[in-house]
Amino acid sequence: QVQLVESGGGMVQAGGSLRLSCEASGIMSVINVMGWYRQAPGKQRELVASINSGGVTEYGDFVKGRFIISRDNAQHTVYLEMNSLKPEDTAVYYCTALHGVLMTWSWGQGTQVTVSS
Image 1 (cartoon, rainbow, N blue to C red):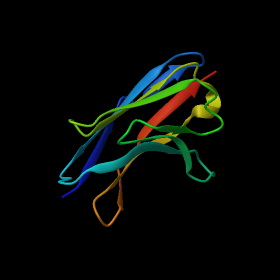
Image 2 (cartoon, helix red, strand yellow; image 1 turned 45 degrees about the horizontal axis):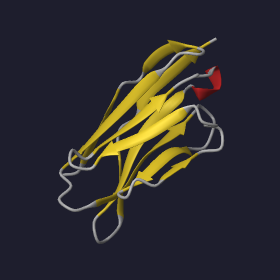
Image 3 (spheres, one colour; image 1 turned 30 degrees about the horizontal axis):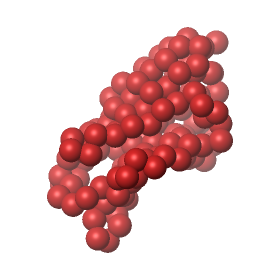
């Protein structure tokens, strides 16, 4: 059974930093892409950052150099270092992984990030 477990969310003041982690288990094939999406109340889920197995990254436009995504392929783990956080970064952050020959997307349960002004 595929599981993605996020950790590292919480509450921080504006300008602060948080580091999210996500470990994937139960995936027996190569994980092509790992990434983070977020969803704020009343808004659509949006891409925060993704990284493929070769280390190529993609970021949402709003990131503007504040976040860094990285992964440990051997450990099936992806990290998101978030700096200079703003109140508008408040959302539930979801880990995702694209894996297998069928190119299946799996999702974590989400971790809450709250940035106070």
